[in-house]
Length: 245
Image (cartoon, rainbow, N blue to C red):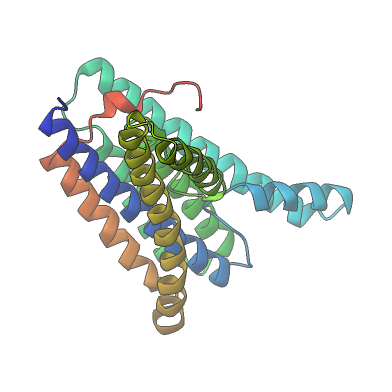
């Protein structure tokens, strides 16, 4: 029988993953609109900009893309180092450190909004930190700052659902529980994507009304997640890097 505390923790981590995905969508669109149409929450587009800039000898485009990639990765490395140090020290709440750092970086982007390049770097570093804070929910690998991998996982899960449904129709009762679990996982992955999209929608509205100050909303959401980690630690031992599934 499943441990009720494990089920409760999973529900909390699902809520946290959805909240952080909303934050990433909001930050991504506010940064995109405010600072030269550059993405800060994922690296695929920046990698393309880097390649294009190098091919066209557009050193401004190439250097900006390289800086964003490097800053994102540096933020992620730093956050993972904090998590590893916390694990070794057996700290009760570890994620809160990265979350507070993310808040500080997002706030720095607001205060430095007149310097586009600097604000972009702060946003990219914040998203790198967030990427490292939560990487797993149960057996699922989670990406809260970009959704391509999540949509790919959703497609895999839906494919499994179709085959399990076929097995169930053919009279295999053992397929029922696995199908229900796979459907629940699919709903979770879909909710992450929806949260990211809604973050982009609400971030666009916030940016049109309050400018870069619209970032205070995602900053507040990150603060709430940090309080959740203090009250109910997110079991960072689950977040140890393992081979991607």
